[in-house]
Structures are given as structure tokens and as C-alpha cells.
Length: 252
Image 1 (cartoon, rainbow, N blue to C red):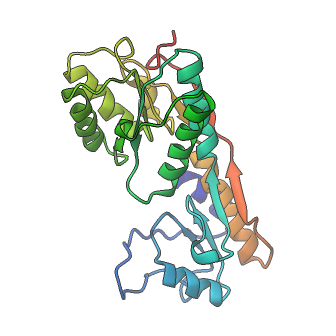
Image 2: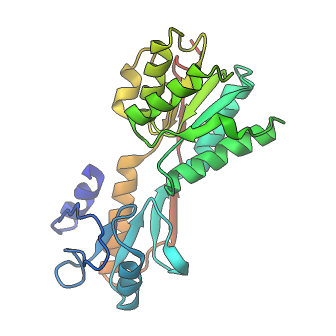
């Protein structure tokens, strides 16, 4: 939100924010009748609403989600698959972890889908067989991830490392390992994704992937303003991510 506001204010626009959840048959409070354009976060508008806005040529830019149903609606996001691939490559190549669990995000979440794909590609590239038992849902949620990892450890699932699809679930995984009387990274290494401010203050500090969240907001606002002013927007803007090495993976 900080990135978005910075750009729209500088361009002379006011920013309206709605946290209205989509409901069947209900219209969204923001749209072509009271705004100049919309930035749409994941799942905050239904597909029929997006189709309608495209049909009336209303300026819309999507954040963190592809346009549904072949719509040519611009999208701004970051490189989830590449970031996940680099992280899992590091766990395998630097530390020789062979049994790496993956904590997925909420079902149907596009970021989680691409991060899991990067995880799978890294395994395949190193000749490691994908094991469905090593994948469960962390839900981008501390408690859900804690419960999931506690379940793994309770049944004695053999694993060397856990790649959580976001830092929130990574922190839940870390706590589950600690409660089981194990050490991070000596017994189980843990890594996350996003590099939120909390990640560097965990014990041990979290190895993760830095996602350019604020810059994504800026770029989405820039693309939307291009559309509002009669210009063209890029169909897809994919911003790079960066591997951040800290101690939770076993590095010093």
C-alpha cells in the first residue's frame, strides 16, 4: 500500500481502499461509476466483475494474479517460481538436503502454485523424486503451519529441511520444530519466502526469498495511471526476487 500511495499521490490522484470481500450477486463498492481505475488484489473481484470491466474498457490492473478466462487485463507480480527454484537449489547444493518438505499456501493461490512449481523443478534438476508426503498446506498462516509441521514430526516423517511458501508459515514451522525438542538448523533447516521484517529477527534468522512487494505496488500504480491517461500498459510485469541467506538453512 505504501508503494501504491507514493505513486498515485505524486500523479495527483486520491487513493480509495476497499476490503470488501466478493459475494455472489453483490456488486463491488468501487468501480467505473466512482473511480478512474482499479488495482485489484488476488481474489478481491469475481471473474464476472472483471469481465464486465474489461468489456466497458475500464482501466484495471491486477496484482499477484493472472487474468482469468483469457482476458487481456494487465498483471503486475514478481518471480515466484525462479525465487523458489534458487532457494531449493541452495538447500540441495550447499547443504545436501535430500528430504525437503514444502508448506503450500491456501488452495488455489497463484503465488503458492508458482512457488511449488519452483520447488518441484529444483528437485527434478537434482535427480530427487517428488514425494507427495512431503507437501502439505501451511496456508500462509503461523498456526496452520505449526500444526502441519507438528503432524509431520509426530509421525516421524523423515525430512532434512522445510521450505515454507511464506515467512509467516516458516515461523510456525520453526516453532513446531522447537516444541518437538529439535533444533533449527541442526536437526531440521527452515526457509521461507517474502523477507518480511520479522524474518531477520527470528531465532535463528530466516533464510528466505526477498520479494519486491513495495515496488510491485509502485509498478502496478504506474501501469494503471498509463491506462487512465489513455496509454497502454504492459500485459505482464514480472519483477525479480532475491535469495537472502541467513542462519536457519545452516549457513553461518
